[in-house]
Image 1 (cartoon, rainbow, N blue to C red):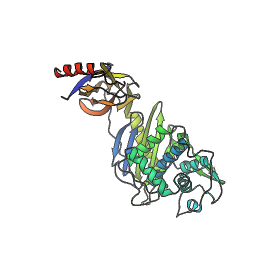
Image 2: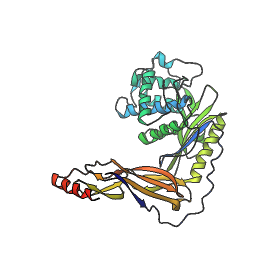
Image 3: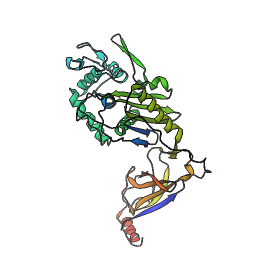
Image 4: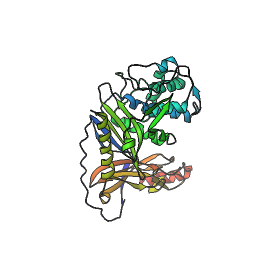
Length: 377
């Protein structure tokens, strides 16, 4: 016999906040966009965000992710010196580059700054060759990471972003790649805030103009497509809260900056991230059968935040739903239920709830007793 048990949970006992302000999303002059709250893991607003687009230089966000992963795994080091091949330093049309010389050694750290600050294609190719022997082989790794991240509208065929019919992504997916970079490799994220970099006697500026215009912006990357569309993936942190915006397809370079800033300002001014539960804090405890313990604590393995419109805390309600009966054995981190959140009585967000304990199977006698008790539940 299986059924679902629901429990209404009181989240806040504070007095009602001020009347909700207007939540009208500003009109953004772009083909598609996405605004993501890194703190809570929620998308606050999107438009055509799953539309396939040629990611252009935004591709290098995933290239950087794979390179950082190779360093973390010990396959590469920042001080390691590499020798650029003729293939890597070749120039097609007006490619962005850091002006590497064929056969002249360059450190991995220099290549990373060229890749991120200058969006250099030659740096991307050199890094691809040392990690995967060829740029196209690195694209396979990039696609594996995209699949692991759950990206449904992304496929890579190169590490640079040069156009190809099978090379595509979306505003939604680029926001998630950006978040993964910040989450998984915080020790390297500072490079994205670097405004300029000089190599081989040539100084180049970061094309992300928000690094100059907004003191809270500290990344990430720009892009320019063959159809004359401008892109910008930007991230800003105010106090402990971080937002990521991806704006795709503006008419001018100036517009991609101004529209991105409007989107970020909208998120900071109209929404707030609130802490629902702390890491390992029990949301509830439930009866567990046939185990070495009778009660199972449920909660989250990390601090759990939620983003809501400002002034709406008192309108937020939660209902915990678990499938019954809960039977041992149960592993720590195993999903046991779902926390259903409503805002003003309207479904808002569903969050998986996991076991905070390991509970082993009880002995034969105890299991037999519980079997009999379950007959009367």
